[in-house]
Length: 411
Image 1 (spheres, rainbow, N blue to C red):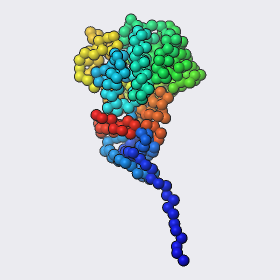
Image 2: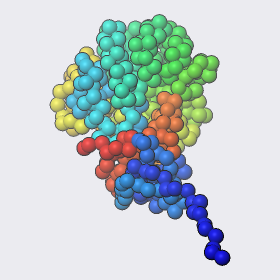
Image 3: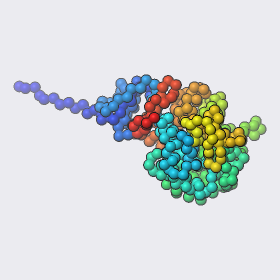
Image 4: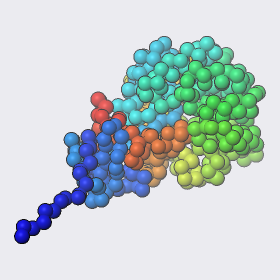
């Protein structure tokens, strides 16, 4: 009698567009011998290669350095010679987006500065078009409801008191793209602005402030209460570039920076840190990370047009900026006028100069800002379901290959 026929019930191999193999920074930490599988522009599996499901990859890329998730910059004014506040078309703004993307920032929040209302309307409209085509992750408005005394490189002529109706109007023009907005806690009408931001689903970012420690603490509490009541991106507000654009710390007047750091230590606030070697001393960066609760620090660039460009003369909004030795200051003055680094440079400085743990620094430039935007299930991680964004770096944390949606970003 013939033997009975047997059937193979093993599942068919997963069809995969790209398999990344190497040491990767995943949700669980640094994983040697990792495998990241990307199909249809999204990650469908990540973990150790030994535990990977059966798959058939159209292309396999083995990398000797580190595989990082695509970076997310929560605060960026421009790059590649182009400034978002000064561009007249969405197409021009793309130059800045692509400059940072080539260096590992696969999700970028485009920041504007204080300007007259009509200019803000126009720029928000242009950036909304870039958001609609998935070129930027969101819009950040840095002003106009800020302190004239702590304005930094912003035009004092257009600083105004808080106006919730203006927030709602700009949010409507943004069409859902408004992600964050900087407001000084002590500004007239600040609470109205916080309320409006929560209503439109944007995150208040407290900064450019000459306020007191008490005013900062009260604003954090107000923002948290409002964000819980409304449908927002994140239940926690942020602090715009901690220490920069804030009243200095004094032992009899601790000011807003200490209050913000205290809130971050309790996990009630996310603080932005510009760890570029210019805005903050490396020891300050290290201290912030040592004090703040897990996932309560975001690394940002605050980059302006000179990022990726040589020294020279630039513009930021209505003001002239001089860049010398990579440091941007207002022409004829001493105020720092934004950064010139890419976000991967900031991560590298935080790790190599400030001694921040690699995984925590990477999360501060990827998963944590993604969570601020309410996009933690879409970007900022190599977890399944996220867009296939990755940065392949060498042992000096310099970019080798950048992937966005599973496709190589041209250098």
